[in-house]
Every structure is written in C-alpha cells, then in structure tokens.
Amino acid sequence: MSDEPPPTVLILFGATGDLASRKIYPALCRLHEQNLLPTPFTLLGVGRTPMDDAAFRERIRTACSNPPPSDFLARTHFLAANPASPEAYPQLATKLYRLFPKTPIPLRLLFYLSVPPALLVPIVDGLVASNLCRSSPPKGWCRVVVEKPFGSDASSARTLNLRLASAFSEESIFRMDHYLGKETVQNILAARFSNTFFEALWHRTHVRRVEITAAEDEGIGHRAGYYDQAGALRDMVQNHLLQILAFLAMETPSSLQDRAIRRETLKVLESIRPIPRKRIPLDTIRGQYLRATLKGTSLPGYREEIGIPSDSRTETFAALRLFVDIPRWHNVPFCIRTGKRLPTRVTEAVIHFHPTPPLLFRQDNGRPLPANQFILRIQPDEGLLLRFNLKTPGTSFKTQEAALEFHYRSLGSLRLPDAYERLLLDVFHGDGTLFPTAAETEAAWNVIDPILHAWQTDATIPLYGYPAGSWGPEAVETLIGEPGETWRYPCRRLSMDGEFCEL
Ligand code: BG6
Image (tube, rainbow, N blue to C red; front, side, top):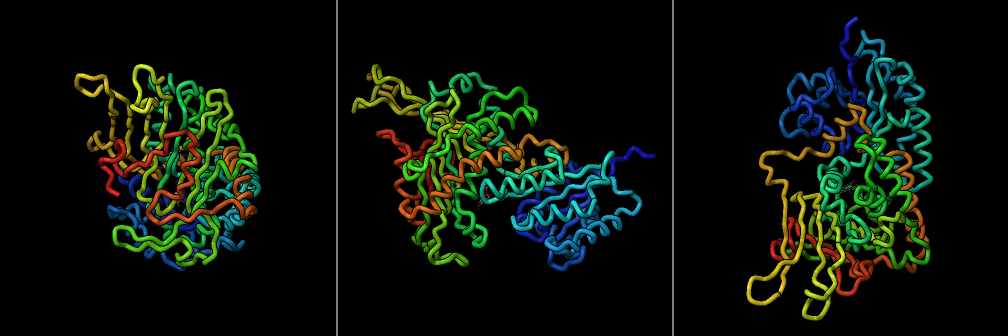
C-alpha cells in the first residue's frame, strides 16, 4: 500500500458564477504558483451551463492573471448539472468514479457552495443522499465551504446550520466571511495582543468610542436581484462589520487555536446589547443613494439601477450605534457604518481615546485638545496611523496635531495575500480559525433581526436619500452624540484628514 495521500477534490457548485471567476479561480491559480495546493489536487466545477472541460479550462485561464500551466488545467473538469435537481448527485458520484477509477472513494472531498441561498439546502440534501461522504474515512475527509449570505435572518440561519450539521461535523463546515481572510483584519489581533501600549489602553477607561467604516464608491453593479433582497445591513453589517467589531472587542484568547479565538469572538457577539425597539430610530440610520453628478459624471440613483423597483425601500447605507455589554466596554459606543456610492473605497477602524483634561493644554475655546486616535486601515493603503498632539515649535506652548504612520507598502516587495488565497489554504488544512461558527452566525443575526424588523415594519423610521458620491445621510452624525465630534471622513490614502484627499 502506498502512503501517498488520497487526491483532494474541490467540487465547486456555482462554477460558472461571478464569484468563481473573480475570486476563487485567481486564488487557486496563485496557490498553485506558490506550490501551496494539496497534491494531488483536482477541481471539478459544477454548473447548469452546458460546457465541456476545454471551455471550462478557458474560463479559468481567463480568470487568472498569469496563465495557469497545462498540468494544473489538466486536473480541472466540469460537470453540467442542475444542483437543484436530485439527479445531479448520482451524476456527480458517477463523474467522481470515472475520474478516480482506482480510488475506492476515500477521497478528500471539498464541496464549495458558491450558490444563491435557495440552493444551499437542496445541495446539502443531495450530498447526503449521494452517500459520497459516508465512504470517506479513514484516509479521506469531506468538508463544505458555504459562501455568504448565510441565511437572511436568525431563523433561516438556524435552519441552515441544522441542515448542515445533519450532514457534516462543525469542524468540517467553513462559513466564508472573506473579511477574516484579509491580512489587515488579522493584524487587529497582532496589533492588540503583541503591543503593550495598545493592549494596556484597550479599555473603557481610556477608549471613548470605536468607529468602523466600510465605504464603497461603487454602486450595486449587476447584483440587483441579490442586493435588493439583502440591503446594506445584511450584506455588510451582519457579517464583515460585526466580525471586525468582534476582533476589536474580544478579550485575550487563551491561544491562537481556532477554538480559543472563536470562543472569544462569540462572547462579544453574544454580548452586543440588542437595540431596544424604541431606540432603533435613535441608534440606527439607513439611507439610499440618489442620482447625483460627480466630477462631471452623472451617477444613477439606486431606484434607477437596472433591475431595481422604482419604489424600492432597500437601504444602501446603514449605520448603527452598538454597545458591547462586557465590563471592558461598558457604555463605550461602537459606531459602525457602511454604504454604496460613497466618495471613496475605504475600510478602517478608529479607536478614539479620551481627551486629556483641558488644564495645561486646551483649545482656544477652552475645550480639550483633539483626542488621540489609533486608526487601523484595512484597505486600501493598508496600515496604521496614530494621531497625537505635539508642541508647535516656537516661543509659546501652543500644540498641533501630528501623526505616526505605518504603510504596509513600506515593507517593499512583500505581497499581501488575497483573502481567498488565505482562506482556501486554511480550508485545505482544516483550520477553522478564520471562519465564523454556527453559533457566531446566529448571534450576529440576533443583533440584526430587531433592526431589520423595525425597518421593515415601521414606516416612520426615515429612509434618508443621500446624493451618490456623498458620505451618506447627514443624520449619521447624531450617532456620535458628543458635542464638537464627528465621524472620521477618511481618504483613500491613509493620512490625517484633509491634505491628501483626492476624492
Ligand atoms: C461582499 C458584499 O461580501 O463584500 C459586497 O456582498 C461588497 O456588496 C464586498 O462589495 C466588499 O468586499 P471588499 O473585499 O471589496 O471590501
């Protein structure tokens, strides 16, 4: 008997979809270039569009920036089948037996579900019926990757989790949140827990407010069907922004093992105070972009986008003020916002510290000096920036603001790996650290559900219009609620505000 590992087969449902071409194939190609794919490795794409292997390979070739070598392409295959139909699964089993006639199926099977939500349960049912996973151990394994959206509310997420749990063990289920694959999101943990001067101050006694912004300058593109059902709250907040919040707020994990980290992030998500019904108009702001002209270009309003009903009330902007009810963060607001068609594409977190007492140093109006800020820039111009006050050179004791900054690009040729590369590699290794668990997805929905419900049922909660290319509804300032303070309005380039902004 040879000791060679059984082949790893990635079975990609949604192989002709947009995400596969934009993210999954390029990531696989780059992993192959770096010799990081498992050996032997096979990709079997499944999709409804009739296509032979040659056409499928051409699709992969086009998606990858460097043309993949023929030995890689030779291990890619396509099965035209409708995943919604039970017949697809015997076809899949037959295809696998044909591809691996000598292997009595203890393969390593990785099912990647990059499909619309309605197909998830039929696919899991089909896989259970096919028995492919039953015959995998001892040398093989079965894993499943599920793309977002993971349900559309707490109840549908629970149903989906139960269905998945009936077919796969929790360690074999990988729920994709690609923000967790971003180097700079992971760096939140390294910055916090490997630096005394951050860790010591990371507490309500020093932190006044935490801000998280994920702004996009693009509109909804060709995703009207999905987006109009989802909206900004489901699309970005339930997953990406709450995961960033959890990394910022978590207590020190006992190790960097997946269980230890996920245990702490779950605690945070479960400790987010549900916004009481009567506070929803005060602690949440929603908006929708309107037609506007930016730098001479006319940008359509959301309701004018192709495929969007002219009376749609879906939000393209969402901002929330949340509180995490653990002693460390008692009464510290976490202000989070996201939106489409904002002035620029930028994701960052800002830690606002308390100002020093206005005794020795203060502004001319008697107010405290600008408080220190620590900015973790997630993208673009990835880096860190620390804002502080220093003495303006001269004969008086006047002060001015200055910044210490670090840009990843200063590390020279070091490439920041793409989130999908990192996450796929983790799935191959069975490492779930960067994948939300069932309990986390449900806890995140529990935060979102009451807001969704109020927004859907209470027409008195305003849906503000905001001009495309602006920073969203002006009412968002009310969430900050501190006199003289505003959100940070960041530029594409990581800097103190103002001077380098090229919007
Ligand atoms: C996706 C959302 O999860 O994240 C999109 O569905 C959004 O609407 C995208 O544009 C943003 O990801 P990134 O990596 O470009 O910031």
